[in-house]
Length: 150
Image 1 (tube, helix red, strand yellow):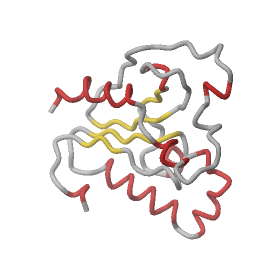
Image 2 (cartoon, rainbow, N blue to C red):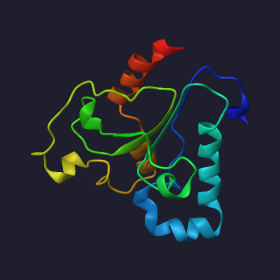
Image 3 (spheres, rainbow, N blue to C red):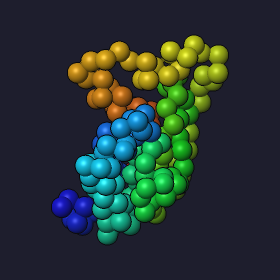
């Protein structure tokens, strides 16, 4: 497995399909057929890999209560990194400092459909992909703040 390779740093964005709180109504079915346990094991294998610097990114969901990872090291929001949106995302960190916000945007006055744009996306074949895309401001912060640590 790729997690068994020797890496200087791992920044992982594993699929959240079977883990995200937004799909909690399907968790019983996913536990019964093993999909959620397989997804959790995949994430645990990444986080507990033999690597000194690891970040696992995932939305709020099953990892907190149903994995060995426990509660995320920190939770971030896109509005802390220059995006006028809200989507609470967990970062499980090993050997890395907490990510610092780079450009704060006040989203309190925005309409719910703007602030939670990803939640309100209409059904489409690409909805999952759009909802799971990492915000550029967050990716830039990870590169800027952690890239020099290797």
